[in-house]
Amino acid sequence: MRPKLVESSRGYDLATFRGDLIAGITVGLVALPLAMAFAISSGVPPQAGIYTAVVAGFLISALGGSRTQIGGPTGAFVVIIFGIVAEHGLNGLYVCTIMAGVMLVVLGATGLGLAVRFIPRPVIVGFTNGIAVLIASTQIKDFLGLRIGEMPGDFAGRMRAIAAHVHTVDPTTTLLSVGALAVVVACMTFFRKVPGSIAAMVLGTAVVAAFGVPVETIGSRFGGIPAGPPAVVAPEFRPEMILALFSPALTVALLGAIESLMSAVVADRMTGDRHDPNMELVAQGVANIAAPFLGGIPATGAIARTATNIRSGGRTPVAGIIHALTLLAVLLFAAPLAAHIPLAVLAAILMVVAYNMGEWREIPKLLKMSGATIAVWSVTFALTVFADLTVAVQVGMVLAALLFIRKVAKTTTVEEVTKEYVEAGRPHVLQDKPIPEYVSVVRIHGPFLFGATEKLAAVTDNVEALAPVVILRLRNMTAIDATGLLALEDFADRLLATGRRLILCGARSQPARFMRQADFERHIGRENICPNITAALERAEAVREKPAVGRADGGAGA
Image (cartoon, rainbow, N blue to C red; front, side, top):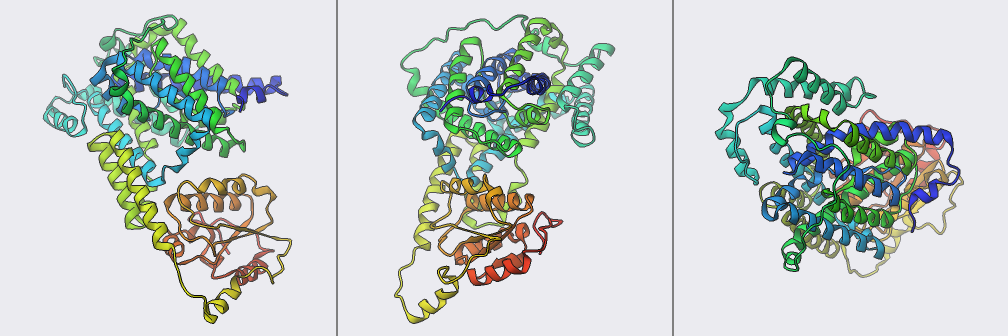
């Protein structure tokens, strides 16, 4: 277990540095408005977000287990930070962040960080949807320029306050917000190489400054951002704080672990690399321990900024370090300019962030699955929005665990071996069937549920070693859930992307029914789902010379 920065130093040349330099500066500028917006919506001064991006961003890149991960404040923490600050104050947030950092270091150092993958997909989608809704709700006030004194911390109270003050909508602020939103969406749609958040911030600030538009800015609400490096802070720790902050600290640690490892997986898919999850969690922990001593807030891997880094040419952790140094340069030389940034523009940017992080495309997929899967997702989502994020994750995990036990028990069978049973099994037997050179056979044995899906990653990450036709034998896969199905979909899509074909065979009743409900056949074609290995080998021979062609709906043709 060692940082990717050490591995990347071998063979590092000027061309690689040039790509890292451009990417680091680009993602640093992209991170600037996001860092401030996340801090403001979390109930802390805007500079706290920049300090976090500088300190945590530097440490996550320097010590992390991913070559291209970009760390900093993210939307996932907004709701939990707001609640911690409201109940325990800024000092309580600092102590909580340090506690979460220690937990992350322990998770990574002991290898227990891999337990994060035991969190099922419906739970992750549920609280991600909920967090997105909560972030959007916190931005309505600044987006519309509503005159509300103190916004309630809970969603229901917040929406009641907005409804009660809807008559105070400021047309000028709203027009600016809508304009900024249009700029971000236009950049995402038509000018993909232009970072929408930077364009909206620069244009919105220029319009307000040039024409003296009377809207609230960072300067009018917070007095601007202090110039110079962050000052050292000494959090006040008292033993009685441990019990009070343990639950929120655990939530911060879990969210940080989930978000960072999800971001690292996305980076792996974009670059073909493979991250070290334990080293990544140690780096996240060290970053969260260090950030509060310089006025920072919780940090984790940021998926959108990591993707921007890769698209801009970043290939090693040096790009992430340059991103942090770019933000430090902004603090040293351009901090006074930030006072002119309109809060309406930052609200518009966060509205887009909330939409993008919501994973809304997952909802139609989940609604096609079993009632139990829908129940886990809907309960987690509802508790995240209307109760508490910590409670939502805990209840979602308990529900998922109970359903796991139920599914395993339901798919376990005890029956007498009869002549009919033996004869029915003959088409599934591999021993008497030659495997052609153009075929690779992969099997899944046992329940393919959350926690076990990582075992398919070894095959998924090495698809180039597989034959042109891959048969996935499901004869001994007794059960599958939403997380397992997502892994199969990813496997199918990765094979298709490399011109290979996937044929499924021998699925038992529960997996077959579940895959039908989720419309899995659109990934490979109905004709490539066979009842047994005999039929699968015949299908492989029939398609061996035909190229794999993507369907209009994302699947593979015959």
